[in-house]
Image (cartoon, rainbow, N blue to C red; front, side):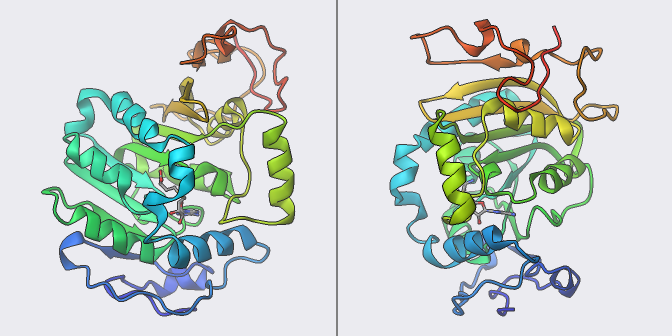
Length: 308
Ligand SMILES: C[S@@+](CC[C@H](N)C(=O)[O-])C[C@H]1O[C@@H](n2cnc3c(N)ncnc32)[C@H](O)[C@@H]1O
């Protein structure tokens, strides 16, 4: 187990659960000494994807992440704009948590757009150090904590109005656990915004196969928009909208319902929107959008069942 970075509060309880510790940093008091050991802490058995994520984002990426080729290729600035647009005027008062916030790019843009109550959590303490430096000049001082979202998000339940998850879903080895944790920290009625790369079949299937054999920077599994919606429903969210952003990404908007809901069921559930209502393709005028296409229930293997 490497020593925690300076400014990171070390949590032995979390460490004993095979995490690497939970800590927090504030831009104002980040002193910046970095982990030096090029070795990931002992994660759960077989969790080689997490070790790969940790190695990449704690050691290789912190300084180069923002200028990384994939950021441009995936049109990430479009993601940030779509998230800010989806937040609407509530952005000023909402308590927002960015899960997997990395260098704090989205947090900085949210702060610039007027958000005042911001928090971020990431697996890699060193990348949070970069985020803390980036956010220091801003008037808003987001609270940054290092933790494994699949184990526990270090805030009490019902702490947030909005959780954002951009470019992180495909990293989760245990997505159900992470989404349940997100569900726990969201207040009833709170929103989850999930943005992730949307790769076209058969590229997605091929890539997922390759990732089974060789993890790359913690990437584990890329989902179709529909399969991702199914994951969210299983964790107790209600999906409100699913749409494409740019060429390579989808944005899912889901809400934590006031009353608990069970996992997605086949057939109609009162008040639950159909996939046809949820799915919307934006910027794809060349062919009929998902909203207009006829599909067999679960035809893409997601099991998401259209209701209407
Ligand atoms: C591809 S980056 C995305 C960063 C940022 N959200 C963005 O939009 O550019 C994935 C981030 O998720 C973090 N991450 C991966 N698995 C995680 C986990 N289980 N818990 C918390 N953060 C995680 C990684 O450390 C990395 O910083």
